Length: 107
Image (cartoon, rainbow, N blue to C red; front, side, top):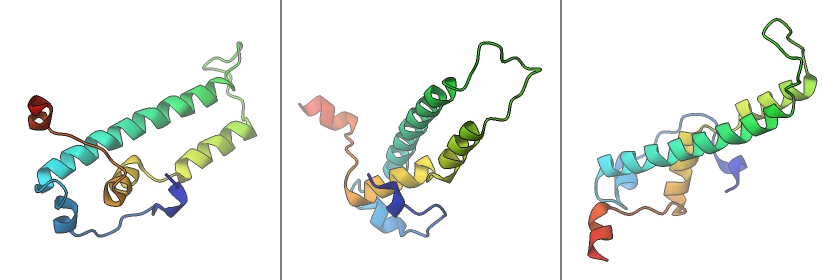
């Protein structure tokens, strides 16, 4: 997904439009929250992995070094769209796959 097309701020959305695919706004909210959590966990793992490269053997709580690359990396992640906005964008564009417990039992 191209994150450049996702707005970085709040956008007013029609709840009827969001509820159409599921038929229930509450189901939609649950789907979106679960996907946003998945995105947040993935981003956190990715950022932690990248920040691990900056951690030295001699770093302690007393020693704080200002690393320009680390600061730039953090700024990049701060500018990224929030996970909930990414989840809503995926849902609206039809890129999000979901299924209910009833559908799993029928198979």
